[in-house]
Amino acid sequence: MPEPPLRIASLVPSLTELLFALDLGANLVARTGFCVHPREQIRRVPKVGGTKDVDVDALFATRPTHVVVNVDENRKDAIEALRARVPTIVVTHPLVPKDNVVLYEEFGRLFDRSREAALLAAAYGSARDELERAVRHAGHRSVLYLIWKDPWMTVSRTTYISSLLAMANLVTLPAHSTSRYPPLAAYDAVWHEADVILLPSEPYAFRQKHADELSSKLPTSRPVLLVDGEMLSWYGNRAIAGLRYLKRLRAEIDAAAS
Image 1: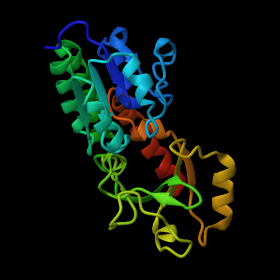
Image 2: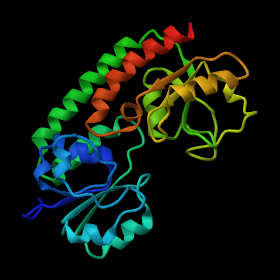
Image 3: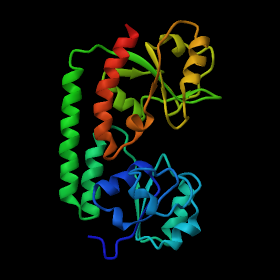
């Protein structure tokens, strides 16, 4: 159990939101500028830079007992700098959707919020079951999920995003990659192999103008859909809404592809 007073700094936007969902908002003393949920409560928490460029001195000034970080989102050198002066570093690395239940349980254990964590796990299970029923007879569709422009970049099948989409029988391209976030050239086969191309709202803020531009340049006609990047890439409690969003998205993709 944490020794009082519990003072948590979160450098991971989705886990900042999870801390509030576990009734730990009053214990949050620092966050990044990308930690924007829950919108009303988060405003009182001081910012200490971004996920990649943490202001270490500003973070130390908040006197945290715990700092929550993530392998993909935060820089290792910054985390190492924190180790010398922060009692507990909480390192996370969820790779597949079911890891959310582990997150709930571990955070519940670590911060004495087991009851709240159990409620989140139950809600996640219900949303997962709803999705499974909805796609039980749905065939596989190949999708190209773009995360950046200039250069174009996508996600490999080793990522959380790809694993989440697979729960709705949406298979990401390329099938094989040596990089978790491979760049794409104009001549790559995936542009015309995908049944649909998805443009998320983050990390690159794709808008309708990007969808129109891409549609005009594709070698063959492919539906290009704008999607909610938070729903498809954030873990923690937002993953519960993400599963229900994915159920609706699968229906939208089927309509567009047909």
